[in-house]
Image 1: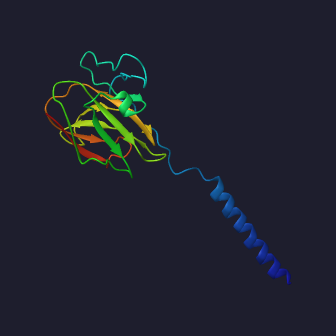
Image 2: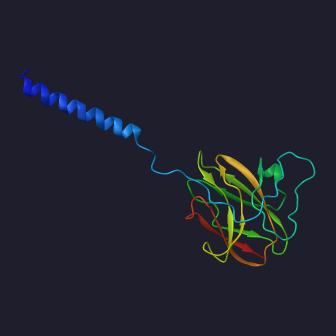
Length: 169
C-alpha cells in the first residue's frame, strides 16, 4: 500500500471518528418545560381517601386534580375525557351550568404528557381552568369550579392542537 493511499485512508477514518463524536456530544434539540400555572393552587382529593371531594372555595378556578381511577375518584355524573394518539377521543363534552363538576381524565398515550384546560368561547379564549399535566398511561380527576352556561373549548396545554368543544348548560 502506498504512503499516499495510507494518508488518505487515515484522513477518512479521522473524519469519520470526528463526525461520530460530534453527533454523540450534541445537545438535545429542546426540552419541554411547562408554563407557570395561571390559576391558583389545586384542590386535590387523593384517590381512595375518605370524605369524597373538596369543593372549590372563594370562586377561584382551581387547577390540578387527584391521581387514581376516575371511577374511584369521580362522582357519578363526571364528564369523561380521554386522550389517545395525541388527540382527545371525544369530539364534544357537556357539563352542568352554575355548579362545580368533575372531569374524569384518562391519558391513554404511553409516555406522553397531557392535561385538560378549559377556555371561554374557543381555544384562544380566556383560560378558566387548568388541570395538572399527567404522563400516560394515567388517570386523574379534576375538580372544576362552577361555570356559566355557554360554549367553551377544552385544550391540552402541551399539545395545543388538541382542541374540542365543551358545552355548559
